[in-house]
Image 1 (cartoon, rainbow, N blue to C red):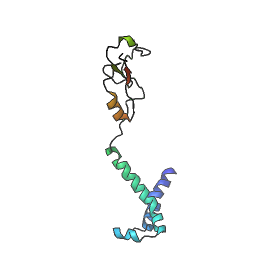
Image 2 (image 1 turned 120 degrees about the vertical axis):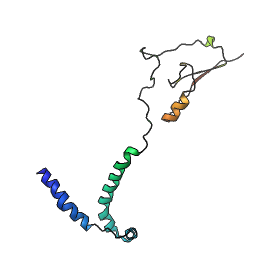
Image 3 (image 1 turned 90 degrees about the vertical axis):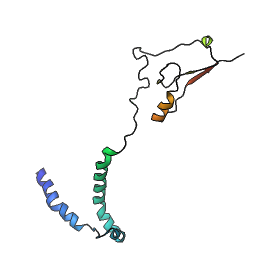
Image 4 (image 1 turned 45 degrees about the vertical axis):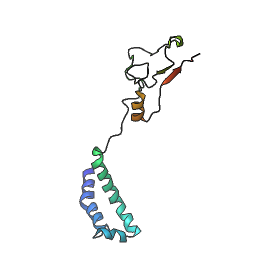
Length: 135
């Protein structure tokens, strides 16, 4: 029953529909179509547009995706929680930058990996900067 219905649509109704379409003889003929004629063409144009999109879709550039939703992808994964303590008194430079993007190769110190991360993801993360007052 189902296949008979599909067969009837393809063999009878589709050719009859296509014969009734107001297809002009030339490209310029599309300018002279009335509104009702354009409305009769819409289903066919929609299907052709969908088929065209599905045909070229595999060749369109892929959107850049972050590897997954985790923030910390590789640092101290064996620990249940990553905690780094640094005594302020131990700072031997006037300014120290600490990583907040979790991408630094010198974690917990920032190596500016956030710049690449921000470019790829559209994020705006930056380092934590500790400044030592010089008296």
